[in-house]
Length: 394
Ligand code: ZN
Image (cartoon, rainbow, N blue to C red; front, side, top):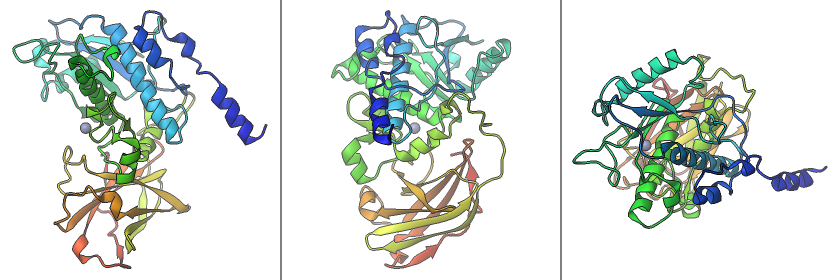
């Protein structure tokens, strides 16, 4: 069989689990999940925790609703990864016999109000650690999504959910639940539909953080073609308008523990020799910047170009590009300045460049450098100082 026939045959293969969409799922969920792509089975599934205080209860019908939503988000990542050259790769989920996603229902030691936005995550993670200790083997990976039902008080309720943690924190991330958090509302221009985009888009985005993804923006032409990056402002468009993952994100997910295919015995995040950068430079060439990095101990080299300030949550404008190995060990990318047209600092001189070195076991190093547009001349090759300030993680 030649390669063309093989691809044609592979495309005709029905998704394995298409027949397995559970009968108790809503009709809309059955319809949406029937569009699924074939998923590569994984070695270490994502842990999904449904977390309660000692005095509240889950939102109605949470097991069906959250299962449908999680399978939908799993499919979204699989479709995007397939488009980006990683067919069927997505995060794993533990499934129950009835087809629902396994939700670890963990009841905390304190009242629900003790687990509030901004402060409650510490106690919550302690309670989950105790659950893991009491239930050996239940927690299957180092990545956990925690979902808490909305507060019910003067400010928050099922039509205006909130109050609970909603952010990424290392390999943990937090999202919320409310009674209208139901896949049947997806894409609808109703209050429930708009809420779903906000909170499911939010879940998919925070989950991205929990899966090692930093914020990023897309180059101008890519956004025109594909919409809004999930790790940019995609949490406001998800389900309503085209929302995509960047190639930059896909590379990080390829090296994420919960995306590892079944049988992959990589020791994720274990200590190993750090990447070594031998040389780095960039050149002003025509209407483009050509970035070149020579380094070892690296699977991928990504770059984010952004305006100051650079802190987390001020980095939604960091435009993502990927370096390719021209020759083994030397990675380059040409960045047309027109792709950075959304830069807001055109009147200012400084531009930040973050080089992200990604290792196969998921370890990530970031090296931040800056340059001054006003000192740049066509043809100039600017050597970049070797990274003394490289740091691990985001
Ligand atoms: Zn974010």
